[in-house]
Length: 161
Image (tube, rainbow, N blue to C red; front, side, top):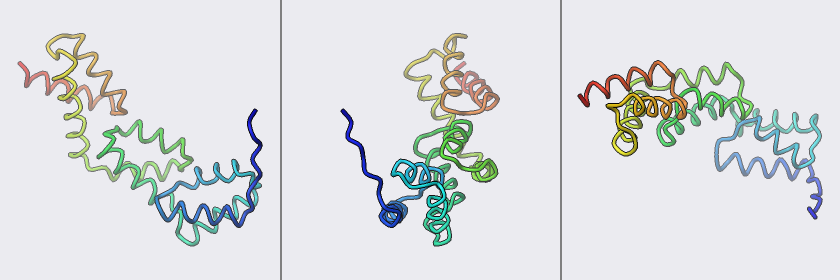
């Protein structure tokens, strides 16, 4: 049987969130979800979030920018997957679009080219239709745009001839 948790006080919630935000960037939507889990009323949660924003503990634009940079460089995600993840975190569409616009196009393409080349070496035969289709699907599954995947796949195929 699950043990029922006692709701925490708003003061304790603010303390916990300040500590969390001091350690890493956080999205206001995620913090709002945490407050709801802790049993904080929505009106009080809005007050707490506004207070954190005013004191610059939380900034969705700053969070989105850091999230985009990290996901492109380290997780090697495409724009579509990043957009979806930010949307799930409760970030506004305008902020998402602005953060995605800051991606360096050359770095972005080289990330995808590296992913496709590595996968072609280890898993798929790029000289066959089936192999190219699987590579194409792999690029899409990483969140990259279909036209970019197709263009880089054609270039990779031309190199292999």
